[in-house]
Image 1 (tube, rainbow, N blue to C red):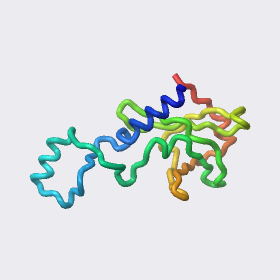
Image 2: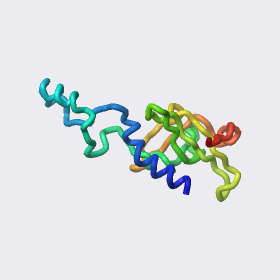
Image 3: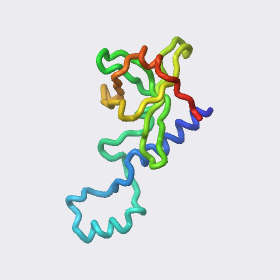
Length: 143
């Protein structure tokens, strides 16, 4: 239940957090100076009508496979996001392999340790660490 609540909360807030304070208005190249000034004055009242280009949702991250960059072997799965007070994604919690859910462990990695790509319309993440390195890393402990 705790994992489902965290997943639901992450899915609800991460898109807004990832995008920071960027404005999601119509194409600014077509706007006049007066329109841009009026928009800036009402920036707090804007809504998003869809996902901006280059953005992705929490469910594009959570539950996705993490692969070793050099060998392309699966090394784990993203279990959760670590979000800072300012709304930026600081890192991820990766669950290493194991057998039938046993023998693996959760490892925390900084967001900058991951490389995101799209493969067959699915998000895939790469790291420079193999599964053995991750299993020997300190276990991530939730507060």
